[in-house]
Each structure stands twice: as C-alpha cells, then as structure tokens.
Image: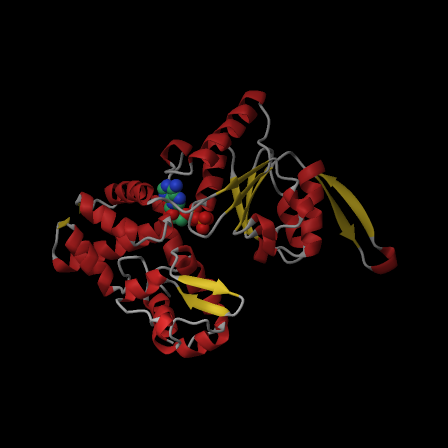
Length: 334
Ligand code: ADP
C-alpha cells in the first residue's frame, strides 16, 4: 500500500475517525463550500425542516466523509453510511431507505458507482420521499408504494460529471472540494499534532505539508509516520530535518512523489528521452499495470506540471528533468 495512496485501509479508518473535525468551525479550508453549507444547514434549522440533499465532489481524502458527519452533527440527526458499490440491487437501497428515521442523514460514498435500478429508485426517493417496493415476479409482480419520512442524502463522488444528469439535479446543493494549500495543510497538521500529543517546529509542519499532495488524509498519514520515527529515535521535538529524514525513509520526496511516481518520470526521461511515449509502453517500462500508472501516478504528476499528456503520448515537462536532476536532450542539435 502506497503511503500517498488516496484509499484507506480498514485499520486506518479508526485512526482517521479520531482526527476528524466534528463541527464546521473546526473544518480547515474549503471556505466557499463551508460557508454555503453553513447557510444551507442554518436555513433548514430555522425552518425546522430537514436539510436539502447535498452532493460533494472531489478527489479522495479531501473531507467528504468528514463533512457528511458534520452535517449530521450540526443538524442533530443520526447518520447512516453506505456506498455505491455496496448497493448493487435496488432491494439493498430499499432496505436502507425504508429504515431511515425522520431527519436522518444518509451518506452515500462513491454514489456514481451505484447500479442503474438503484439509481432510479433513489431519484424517486429523493424527490418524493417514496419508494416502490416490488413484490412477486414476472407477470404477477406488483409494486407497493411506501412513504418515507423526510431525510437528507449526502452523496460523495470523485467527479460530479460521473453522475447522470437526473441524479445530479436532485441535489439542492453541490459543493466541490479542491486540493488544500500548504498553509491549510499546516493547519490540519497542527490540529492533529495537538491531538496526538506531538511537538513539531514550524518548519517541520511545513516540511510535511509540502509533501502531502494537497490532501489532509495524506498529511495526517505522513504525520503518523513521523511520529513513529520520532518515537523509535527517542526524539521529543521534531524539527524540519527530522521530519524530512523520516519521510525520506518512507520514500516520499520533497514534492510528495513516492517511488512509483519517480520511476514513471525516470523511465520517461531516461529510457524514452522525455517522450512522447504511449501509456502502455511506459507502464511496461516501470513494471506496473496500465491502470495503476494512469489512475494512481499520473493525475498528481500532471497536476504538478511534471508530466504532460499529448495525442502522441506522455511527455516529461521541464520541471520533471529538473526534479530528477537530469538534463533534457538538446532538441535543437538533432
Ligand atoms: P474523503 O471522504 O473525501 O475521502 P475524509 O473525510 O475521510 O475524506 O478525510 C480524510 C481524513 O482527513 C480524515 O481523517 C479527516 O479528519 C481529515 N480531513 C479532511 N478534511 C479535513 C479538514 N478540512 N480539516 C481537518 N481535517 C480534515
């Protein structure tokens, strides 16, 4: 498992839970979404109504689950958690929906991965607070309408564009979460360090923040690795050098690249003279699946301006050569 991976293991879920902010006021950054959401919730509370359905989009680890928990907390409502992949049959969804209590918040992670029939059932439930339960099979099947108490769906997706229009339209509020700035990540880290009873210098916080790929989940994960390292080294106060040394040990470099990212760039520069080279050729060169290179390494490399995608293939950007300490070939000479 990569230390910079977006996904989480079961074990990590528990550690993460302890570090989650519980109120909007403690949620770092994302000012626009936070202010808009705060308004939606306040208005619902004043009307004495259930909050509108909320759609949150953005890459993994930026706080979608956390925000859904905050919505429930702020509304004083219970929270139910499920996900698109867990709801494959409309019956699965019917079971969840029919057991919701009034005002309950249902968080649906990866909502774009729900099956089509479940999706259609969800449209109706979101709009009319009603589901049709189908009883029997074939010609004898009948559907029995079931009224539901009002509830709030908080849907999360990595990209809002992945959702079919009719589903997207049923959300009263859509918020897009963006990668965090280094300053914001430092705030996340300071909060977590206080909770973990760790002492770090200002420079150490910024050292970890710059390696965290704009992602609070990764920031917290790196912080815990630094904590392990400090513990084993018998260090009470972590300075920038110690933080850097700890993270070098886990092969996270100064720009947050890990071994896979670097080997992709290195192959691109050293073996293919900076490209353009096809994705599958590049994947073979680094001994990885095409999908791994495409979904795991590439997005961050592109975002960091290290790798470019052209119709003829992947190319190394000038910053890639610089980061690897290599000299680009002199095109004018050829
Ligand atoms: P997502 O659901 O988008 O994958 P999570 O909500 O699970 O992300 O967040 C991952 C971790 O990062 C959690 O432990 C959470 O505490 C932390 N985190 C995310 N966003 C923030 C934030 N704005 N402020 C503080 N901590 C955050």
